[in-house]
Length: 253
Image (cartoon, rainbow, N blue to C red):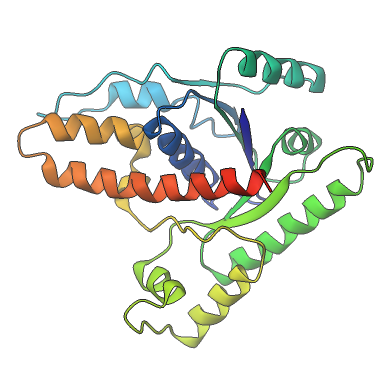
């Protein structure tokens, strides 16, 4: 079982969006997923209810995926590791842990249980400093464990990224950025990072409404006139799968 923990020192960086994106990717690959919602706003815990209450108009809503469960993280370290063992024994493929913003002891525990710690960031100068702070936090945490214990891989991921920045990073079509944007991008990409970026998309903003991406894709594909929206969901799903595959690859290193 793969364990991915998302951390940041401040809210609004896209942690929960990245968590939902990774769950979508794993579901699209046919995997069994569990999510721990340790964030203060409890968006993940309310995801299924928000999905079931959403009005989809003429599109017939698909059932909530049985392969996805969401719960609060255990209160103690002992219970945390016991729950991880139980999930693995039950055939869970992926555990995603969303944490509250800030450097807390319980977040340290949720980071240490992971194979990979992901630090989400938006492409803005203020975010760059937050990313550095989060990396320093993990560096300090790594010094508290013994040499015999393994420490998770720690990398950043860019989320809510405008197309112009994605194209510039990939050097598509000779794309050029204003100096300010270029400095921000170079700074963020100067940290250990995943190459896949999550684009700025209204579909990501409406995760609570449409649920996991492959669920929405299936429902719109089956609806009359829903091909365009289904294709949009599919495109985003493929991006999320690319990120998920990168993360899994880093854990194997």
